[in-house]
Length: 225
Ligand SMILES: Nc1ncnc2c1ncn2[C@@H]1O[C@H](COP(=O)(O)OP(=O)(O)O)[C@@H](O)[C@H]1O
Ligand SMILES: [Mg+2]
Image (cartoon, rainbow, N blue to C red; front, side, top):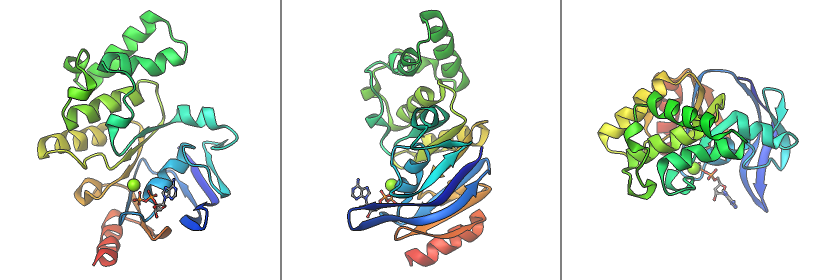
């Protein structure tokens, strides 16, 4: 994985959501922290092209997030802050299959891939369930399956443990620890990020720390105080 921000920033009219920044990200697990409204989601959405920079550019493994938008979308999976908003079809199995259908896979290939991803996360029992009836943790796992089944190299999770009870939080934590994909996690759940290789801290749209988890968490606590 090689993500490069080249003086990339975002303004919404007169409001600056992200002050232009330059950095390169290569670590396998990267955390993003900061107060509400500090620019975390804007930063993360720039990486898969959901938000376009108003200055500069972002290059993911050599692909420009604006010029090569569809390839970037295939490379970078994104789990929204509220995963219920990204489930498209009512039944879990159909939702997981959706992205594969859109990519032109045939029925037999889709069956194999969907069963494979359900088994990978040990959630085959969710296949026939209605997505809107799932618990927060189950929904998070279903969203993870729907995104990872298409094989992105990079996975971005926006506050994945926000609405979860302790058991489901532990499940998400364990899952993240074993994912072979590169992960970028936005979170207020600081212990979740403790063993990450690198953590970025945003404050009022500005990147104010880019360091070890321990130092970043200490900096965030100072900002929040
Ligand atoms: N689509 C938008 N239009 C206008 N302002 C936005 C939009 N999205 C985010 N913002 C503003 O940009 C700033 C950063 O937002 P965001 O990246 O969502 O922060 P965070 O994820 O850290 O809570 C906030 O002030 C927010 O109100
Ligand atoms: Mg956010």
